[in-house]
Image (cartoon, rainbow, N blue to C red; front, side, top):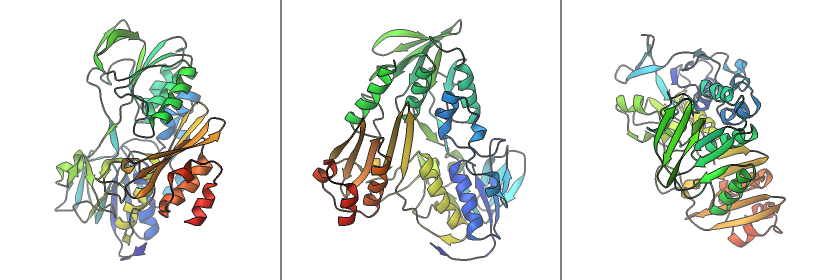
Length: 413
């Protein structure tokens, strides 16, 4: 990373999730003279999103207990809560805000995140229907779990967020049914064997799964929700949680005339089609050396890392986003973790058994090992990250053999 210029800049960052907070800190760090304004839609100090489907519903801990960074790390940054942009005037390099104010910028960073995908049959305004994206959603879901023991709960979607809520609901004593349009759980994150093991743990806890099933209609009477599906009888439930992914919040960028293809298109420096505007996190679409086409990556670690790069460059530095991304998910005692680029991992897979229910699988793409995911395999994944970063040439049999230490493969690369 290098510094191109130390000229003082006014940098406006729209969105105070992990990418926005990381960008604001990096922009100040690269030049303390920079005037950094961070616009936050919510009124609270920026908080972590992962606990919304983990600790908040399972332990009842308020989201405010999980700030992205301590308040003192935002010292020197002009954090404006309950504030969001309604339009970008690129010609004037200005942003129009919801309160009628107009702010001028030298560089702009868009970290507007994503919005949950909505099922038309289950609108979020319906009582006892929940979507999970912010602190208010998580608090409402947690409150609904009071007295939920023995009640019927439907979870729509068997991705990571959906399964975390399944775990929370079963632990609270609910009778849970999961509806998934695909043939397995977590299809984007691992093999069928990985999905089978994760699903088995949920079934052990009492959850029921309906695969290749979509909701066709929902009726609401006397507090109950009658869910109609495409391949079987309807089911009556007391509560529904929908977790079927997110849409990038790219409307502001699109209205401003920036290049958008699902997400905001950025280069390795997080620069958009306007050289004075950067973007990072869930809202962007970008190329990697591992995947054949540009990707949208929705996870916390990626947002932090890419936000930092956007902030460095917006602040006058020069850096490229080359980080190997990672994610984690807590479900009961299971710790699921992944590292690398799942989008480019369309080749063979090697499975290594680690004992006591622990496992790790290694996924290959055209350029070799590019992704790994495991259960209870934190130490092994830390080594695998370095194998991927260094592009070590490893073979399937060595990775699958638990007698061959991964550290040995790293040293031989």
